[in-house]
Length: 383
Image 1 (cartoon, rainbow, N blue to C red):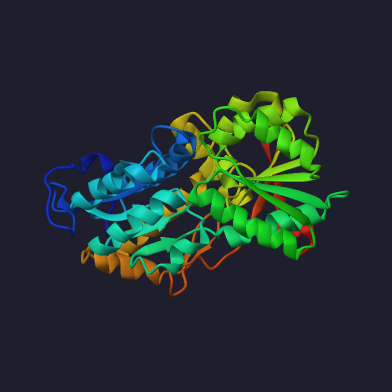
Image 2 (image 1 turned 90 degrees about the vertical axis):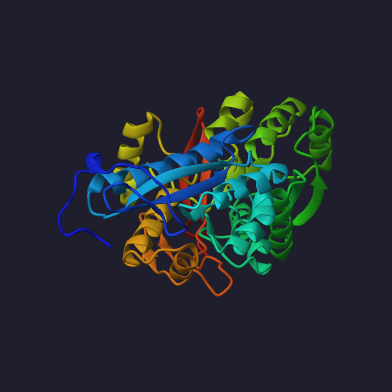
């Protein structure tokens, strides 16, 4: 519940612990923890840090506002973006009794492993970035997807390529991860439905030398390449493609939409298109003030899914407040499943399977060593 009289955030002390309805903050108000599960170390850590910072900013602003009679804490659950460490990361959040909701898992592979555990614990897992369509078809119990799935992203890739002169054939390559295979499958289907000649290949993300794969792309004669995977693998692949003389259109998804792609690939990243269900917080009017506060707090601009994760953290905080002290994991999940929340980036609501109800996809392009915002794909394609 909200306090009638604002209380200075500095007066709130984080002490003690209690049951799953939150610990006591030491001044009569409980402490609730919001966890984040995602890659906070290892490969693709840049994507995880983008989201973590957005969540941390929302928590800090709520505590500093003095509007609430509870205190919020952030709990990191680092899964390194890997299925093999997803169980340990999820269990670390579940074992924290004050954790009342989780934002994540960030990647589709770890989500498929961790979501059943969160379901058994009655703990809401709200992912702002796990886009494999199958995740909401498996009855995980408490999994909510706060982002359009890859059906929308694959269709957007086809819609965009259909607007490009001279593109008749496309090669689709996945990185043999659940995310990459899911995105490649829907991209393949969408491209074929749009009338493209499509070739499909898989190149594992741990490939040491992409020279052979790059030569195969060039020899295929494809006018465009869709890469379904993460930036850590796309970067060396892009370098080899450039060396092999690939001059078609390169396009990848949200897993590659990070500045680290440019840092790792250098000039070979120039011209690549990147789709994402995420908006550019620095370009959209609705998120510009958020972007300024984010940069002031972390000395870097917001990245992929920073603003969406900020929105979801605030959505959770609003629901905690609305429960007027009757907060437990299951009750909070039920409140979130039925929510209609207007964030800075979009409106959040979920269908009966926990699937997000909006489908907007946005396009970016690497130009002059930076990822530039192009716009809404559906608007660009006139669809």
